[in-house]
Amino acid sequence: MTKKERVRNILEELNRKFGKPKCALNYNTPFELLVAVILSAQCTDVRVNIVTSEMYKHFNTPEEFVQLPLEKIEEMIKSTGFYRNKAKNIKLCSQQLLEEYGGNIPQEMEKLVKLAGVGRKTANVVRGEIWGLADGITVDTHVKRLTNLIGLTKNEDPIKIEQDLMKIVPKDSWIDFSHYLILQGRDKCIARRPKCSECEINQYCIYGKKKLINS
Image (cartoon, rainbow, N blue to C red; front, top):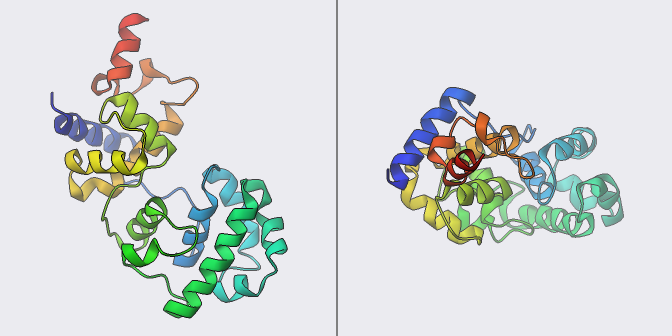
């Protein structure tokens, strides 16, 4: 079975399991999503949602974050980790949005990745979630881990992984594919204790097959 065939089967199985996937981060505006994705680096979506649910009651626009002292932003987001760098990026990103785009989030990938705290992963999430646009595939820690275990790539670098996946995942499934692997990573393919015997896609996974044979 080729990688493309395995991907097609994985998509079918996880679609049956999860239905139409959606972003796990809570937001009401594109800017709220952008900030949430910046906060999600090295942090769980659950923790980010806890932090933003309170923070967005008081501050949720670029204008408001530009006016806030850096120390105030740090205080609000401290539990997400790496809070000093994240706070600096959120404040600078807000300033860039106001000065260059009238406070709006640009759709273009090349413009998004020039914003403070925004790399390809963040840009892919925002573009896919807000506008249904996909220039690539979001590669977070779950996607990186699962695609290596499944045997869809041997690369560790997210950019190289994304390039590998773009060759074998149908373009109209680029957005959903990442969501599905993230959901499966939380449910069955858990980092420290993968439940291979219960996994719905174990027959398409190199690691899962080996583990079941040796168990």
